[in-house]
Image (cartoon, rainbow, N blue to C red):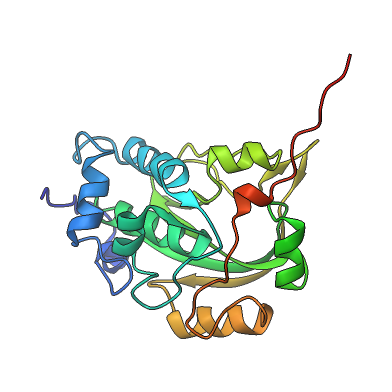
Length: 233
């Protein structure tokens, strides 16, 4: 394992450490990184961008069947099963960049989500979702990154996937003719996944959403996407 670079401000070094949920010392996360990053000592921004796209597109975005247990929300679990939604994918990205010495935090908020099927909206009780993303420190400043909705699912829901260059926030999701995901409330940034807060927020916002086991009840976002319109001459 290559040691992460340490030339970050001393005030931020704690944000490069592994945690219970950002468990990048695990074999699963290390393997995920090795499959993406050729040289861990290379330019940090370039490597962060590579990891962003790997999390966005090689980890399938799926709400149904997602494991919301403490174990299920660890980065190592998501790196293993290659599936999850914003809570899982943001934790994996935060863990992966920390392994390269890039400080990261997890950010939570309430958003109005365009990528939701009618069945999911009914199950949720509306189109406002508790949402997770990642904040990383690059080139002397914090930027927000949302490696959540993979390219295939975006195509099914007529959305453009969020891009990331390591310099500008990847936050406001393009939709349709130019609308964006609407952020309604910012719950702040956290050094590790605040499990009790996350679960309390999910159960409060979406009381019909979770089963007693902490697993989102069954379905498939891909299968629930509206079929594309049939073009006629």
